[in-house]
Image (tube, rainbow, N blue to C red; front, side, top):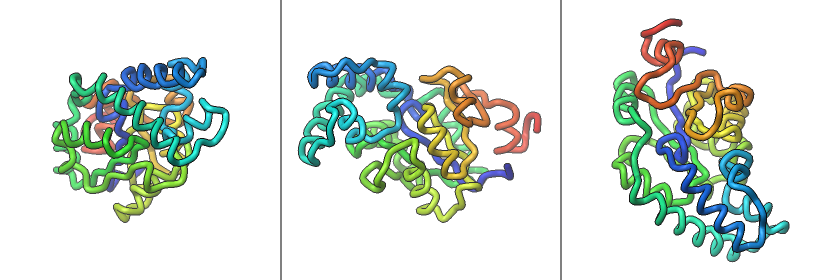
Length: 225
């Protein structure tokens, strides 16, 4: 890959390490709906899908727009109550974003998180000003692993997918970014490395404080090629 012109970040599990809080909220919601869905299904199999897509699975039918919105509001309010007091970026993120901007790399977010959740993270951590583009589920027809969110982010940036580097934490997210033509770095906040590699992640990192040498070289010209 040539040096990217843009970096497109997922939000949950990528800018913040919050997937366990989503897992708890989703598991509680599933029980209230009479489903025996497991936390692992929410955190791995369905991560990156829109809430409406997940509710269709849980209910065994497609809910009306009003019902899906009501259930989503309930689940997401539960998540925000759990995670809000613990809000924090993945280690090294702020300095990493500074380095990208200094290198002329443009920044975007492509996430299935609804508006209130985006505001909690991006507003609560003063990240809104960092990103030129933020794409949410209301702008696309399908969640991940479909490439819609990443394609929309690239389109709004005016950058071809092949010149974007995506940062993701889920298998569905990595697959979505790859389907959009993007090279992908996998954050090891929720998945084991072998699953992200098998999905197509070219780089693996625990956080942003220390990049793999090959990723450091790609972005900044340092480290091993």
